[in-house]
Length: 229
Image (cartoon, rainbow, N blue to C red; front, side, top):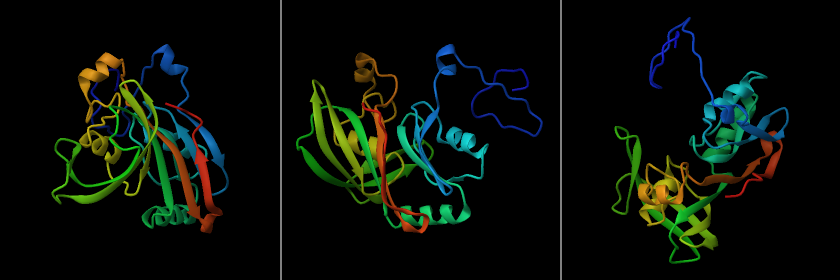
């Protein structure tokens, strides 16, 4: 900033000049691809290590864009953005009323005791530590995380995860609580196993988004990332 290297949490002032330097590998990487676009929405497939805000910013350069939901920086996959005030309001209502289904793929350490399960617990935010805690004692808000085993790969398992509640870090924290930490997750996962596995980023993919929002012409429309873990 202004020719001086700074930390990520510095405060910007009007007229500050900011430069961001990338490696050759980063320069050649696409931040996202567009899966679907019309006058109301854009559905994007975000890459890992890209902030959701970066996708929003790029779309906003072309036309009016509204933030509907976020993915963690190191979670890749499907996101939807609105382009009109009416589309924004309709999509936010659809999310609130659970007319949007989010399905993830997660590569985890361990083998689940069941091939399919709907797990319930409570999630409590710890703002100071920038993380959440999972418990079965009733502290926090109730959460529901459904998983299905798609494949077992030695010491890891590939899970299809359906969110019935969409809370901060829910998948990563809840799976870790169940003894199934997401591979590459340094916040809730197993650092030693991540290092041994050579996983620098979490293996979590927002695989599919189904939107039932007839107000903007999306009646059970399903959007799927072509990526695989």
